[in-house]
Image (cartoon, rainbow over all chains, first blue to last red; front, side):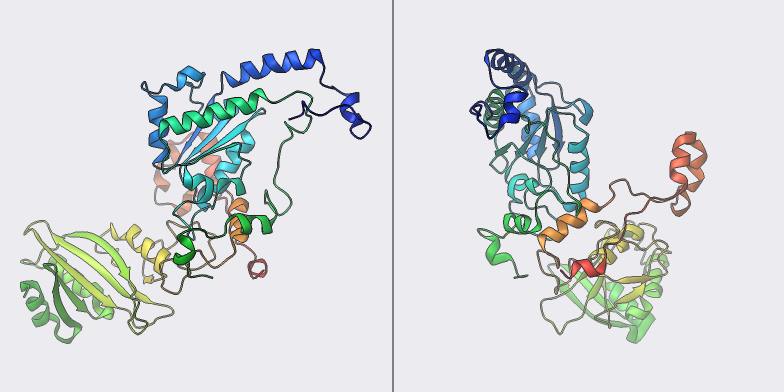
Length: 206
Length: 209
């Protein structure tokens, strides 16, 4: 990401501002090292995934090894939003407001099948994947995922953070809702929310 | 047969319908127009003493001929006896029945839930509004059999309405039952609570998209 943006005539704006050079790549290394080793999580626990998340934070799995022991219950001081559990439509504006209140840099982990896709709850009350509400960096599958699964997702997020660069100007742009109040085009939301697996047979609305 | 059913028959006659035993529990059908009288009698008559209202709920069957039923789960703490009272509602589209909040205050939220999920209007309920779904929910009553599992609107429309909802909507102090505690609150909070803040009901033109 960004690092492979070479200076050409097409993206001359990158050249004029900050192009990847020795100084910025060394700075990236330092900044990303610092950021990835002290991610303060904003726990958004709505269901059984939150139990596994608590287990991850407790002594056996010990989230403190990754500098994440400080649960930030204020979005203003959080770096990574961990949505642990299914998200009903009633909570959609709440998680969106929490995401909007978090300062940059910020990342989102979607923990569990329900947060990522709606899971078994393909019904009238449930958001079919929180990526229709907020941008998601890492999806952790499982129902609920074991703490090892969440830790693997966190390590993947570390890897992603270590690949970021200051030269990428789009990376920290706030992704706000459009004038309809949606994050994605409606067709894309319908496509993402289509029934799959068992719920194709359970759904009677089609 | 359950002794309370025989007592009900002798007291109310035709207003008491069939009684059955299912899995050891007795349930008895009563006239929906007299539900308040019958339940009051069951609660207040010595020898009956059904003083605890366990649950109020409703049933709609897959059989389209059968009508919606409201179910009252009663229990006598004094005698350790349960009784289930059912009332069949005649109107399929706009079912109505008298509220039993005057008898049991605990029926307040239970009846609100039945209203929210089944659309049963409880006449005389002090505060009949949705309790689980949000106030601007416009898709209907989710537990009715004609309600599609995924809701009536498209997923994108549901997401749009959800994201446009006001997460800080609240009722004004006057609308709530705790108005007298208002004066114990800090001044700024009292100011904020003075006027209710409402979400907007979604435009019906847009939902038919």
